[in-house]
Image 1 (tube, rainbow, N blue to C red):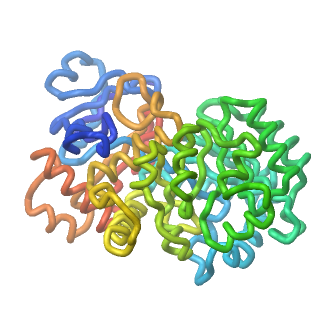
Image 2: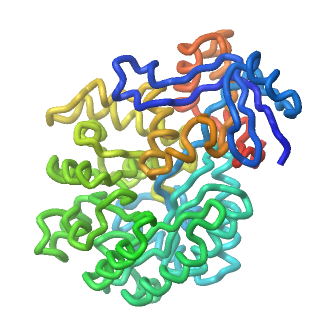
Length: 450
């Protein structure tokens, strides 16, 4: 691949804004910046006046006047639910039975899985997402289709065979077996893990749907493959939590079920984690495990509010998940809109002890959550998340005046005028999101949208 220099206003995070005395210390802002890309990776970044003369052979792509941020990282969703996104009126367990399982049963067909995977990745790129961790279904075809499309597109993608075998929690035709889950996961793992940018996630769907025998197999896979990820669901809905404790009466709480099978460790990513106790948060932090915060689905399904101030207090890494189709969007920016509102509602409605400042999601905190924070949630911060040299060249070109309202709101300012203007305009895009704000998306330095 020839060397390319992408010019525009650069904005990325170099640290966690929650840990900084002043939030702006977490940001790197270059008004007239350039990313030099070769062989899919960032060779150098900085002020264009300094960088371009060092790379005279580079082909310049000029996005002056636009804001360039790292590609968004989605740590939790369900690509197989793309066709049922925005389905009306159910909470979690009823929603699964009414919409999810009938749709996911169609993934016995490889042709159907291929069709959905192709649409899914194009929609991800249209929304600026370049890294995604997704659930599949209990059918190997669903995993094969996902990884094959990810390889074609160059996306960084995590996925794995979904495990669910408990009678009564899913249709008989959908459920697998403990041995089938182990054997299928093993075969797919050996075929795709660390091939191109594919990474394997061991994926028992949730303790509600897995028996002791299946979770034991998941633990065996985790022990045999410590470099793999583990993704599941945790404490999403009160009815789900109550049922899990009935199924596993020897466990003190929901997290304790996963601990029992050796799953809670680094690269364990638990979706939702809404109803965790302080002790569960502490144990998550001690284990270096992570949470996927899914505000769109938590609001859409009426599940509840994730307490990220408690996660921060106990050192629990967390990232952003659109969680489609329970979430009603595939956009990270629109999901940040919901995240902001989740934080603000907790400031005024929760009577627990809380860090009100932590719960106000500013532009810098939102950008961190969708990029470097989510990369750290996935233990991938050495590869993605900001514009450091040697990282994958995944980035998004944002039009901060992508609608008439956004343009009017700018009041003539450009994102390059100051850090304050860039942050003001980023916050506006997440609160007033329209598709037109995504001007272009680059994956491994290749334009995949726009």
